[in-house]
Image 1 (tube, rainbow, N blue to C red):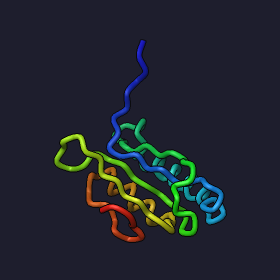
Image 2: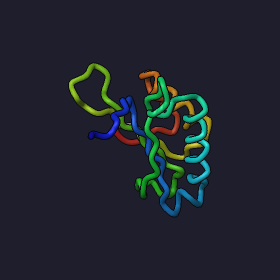
Image 3: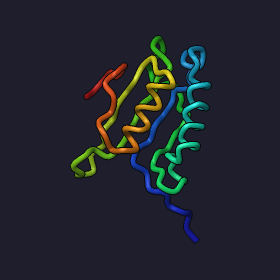
Image 4: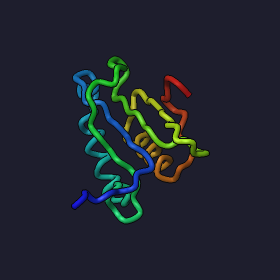
Length: 115
């Protein structure tokens, strides 16, 4: 017997390091999880495609909450697109998640690192 496979378009990670938690990352994670559940965006829901994970420190300690996204780069080829966000609030996290689900361009607001 093999585990059930759930197709995934993107994986979102929300930092739960001490500094980010002090800036509300635990609340952000719960709010985003509830949103993915309610709007059927979570990978195990019919039509859903997103995975959400609490992560350890993502390295932007003075700028949290920090969120990063990994998804297959448009055009195929097996390359991953990555997007890193600092000072993320729930409205921004919701826009990031929706864009990832829709395979649309990710928001530029609060984005840092490689483009």
